[in-house]
Amino acid sequence: MVRDDYEVVIGLEVHCELSTKTKIFCSCSTEFGGEPNTHCCPVCMAMPGTLPVLNEKVVEYAVKAGLATNCSIEKNSKNDRKNYFYPDSPKAYQISQFDKPLCYDGHVTIETENGEKEIRIERIHIEEDAGKLNHDEYGRGSFVDLNRAGVPLIEVVSKPDMRSSAEVEAYMRKLKSIFEYIEISDCKMEQGSLRADVNVSVRKKGAKEFGTRTEMKNMNSFRSIVRAIDYEAQRQIEEIENGNEIMQETLRWDDISGRTFSMRDKEDAQDYRYFPEPDLVAIKLSDEYIENIRKSLPELPESRKKRYIENYGLTEKAANFAVSSKYYSNLFEEATKICNNPKTVGNMIMSDIARILNEREEEPDSLKFTGKELGELVSLIDKGTISSAIAKKVLEELFNEVKMPSKIIEEKGWVQISDEGAIKEVVMKILENNAQSVADYKAGKDKALGFLVGQAMKETKGKANPQLLNKLFLEELKK
Amino acid sequence: MAISKEEIIHIAKLADLNLSEAEIEKYTKDMQEIIEFANTINNVNTEGMGETIGTNEKVNVLRKDEVVEFGNRDGLLQNAPSQDEGMFRIPKVLN
Image 1 (cartoon, rainbow over the protein chains, first blue to last red):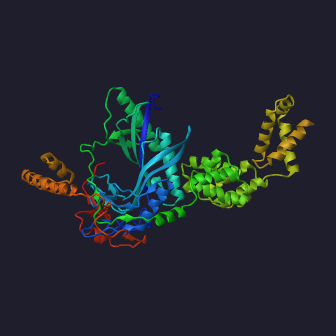
Image 2 (tube, each protein chain N blue to C red):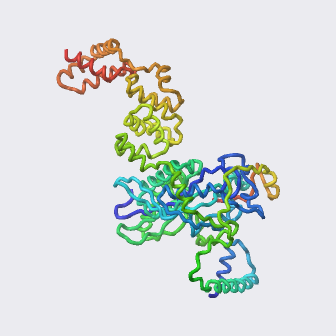
Image 3 (cartoon, rainbow over the protein chains, first blue to last red):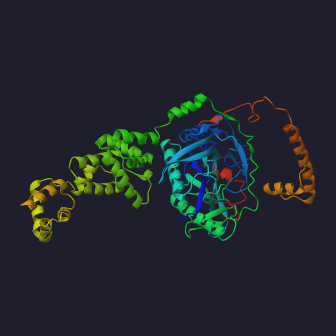
């Protein structure tokens, strides 16, 4: 996609809304949705005379995020004021962190086509989200809803360590998965709980200096991020090849036309005039506080993966997949406990469940059924009650309605036929109707057997026990 | 260090202020004095002193994560020059 003699350099600022019950500096609810301006109070509406008070959970969650991404924790932290005018920010400043972020110098490991790669994290800081502007199509103005103003965010700033859109996607998915495991955010991208500012530049391979970068703000789907990076890298290369210079600017990605557009807002270089937030006091963290949080962290994907390979005999690929999301991982563990067949469970998650989610354009967090249903399903295959072909159909049903698989197969009449007499009848019928295939098989074409078995499966709507079917066909064909 | 008129105009722009010629003159002079004062502080010998974070001696003033509903949207909106459907109405903002 990108020319061989160029290299793309990408750095990300990932914003993640924390799943605290209340806002960062006041006791208003953070719940998504809600009538406009009903999760608001004088503090988050910036009424004169109000003062912010920091939510202790925000500090705890940010430290959790830092520890889970191998960061050092700043024991002497503070908040700073970032000044800018925009109607979604009622105070005309955002309380953020400047030179003393809570977490710094971390990294996460991603899987790339060339093996594992470390992406360094420069810092993670806490800050408040802005409100939402609604525009009406009649041009009567814009409408400000401040329900989201003051919802706590962490901003995770990476080093410019990524070299392709695929690495960016892997990095974002990794952060999302870690934050889901440690339960600090619901990470719902479609609701804006997880979004990224993407910085892209290109340079000739081997060049030491970075090229001039452009920034695309508030990207909230993996697909858009990948497309936008590929487009923007290509655009920059063409500009350079045509002898033009890249301007440092903020761009807007348009998903419909598949292009980036200049926002032309860089007449003044950004100057936020940061200064220490005078309305808040310092945040001092003790070693004991940090260690207690470290101890409270759940088992993270790296360790789970190791356990799945060593104790459950999963392949590296299946283990990677099973831990790629907390939802898969929990499903895997719960189902395995019930059916004691980790390999089949792992494969079902990786191939069938992932495929169905993909077809439905859904993410693992939308799975409605649990390990209880999946575990029983695998047990039913192992007991020979259903074939794996039927199991796939049961899975599809589980996406539509959560019921125990035994109940589904009973209702649908999908129980496997393991009665030798009944199957033999089918076998005889198929042999009679497919004389050519029988002749082919006898002439040494083994493939013909597969065709005959397939026909028998079709005849029984996939319910025939496949081992039995094979055995009976072979017996008859040998005669 | 001297501050220029252009810098004052730039700062005023960042602060969304429209200054008259006379005000620019006045603030250039005022700002010069402020900077000189800051320079005095910058030159204080602080060797051997720890880093100061904030000027308040209190630290970790934190709140429990418990919802308290304010419950008076009308009150919050009552001084808005214009409102519609529970929201502040403002001149159209282009993205």
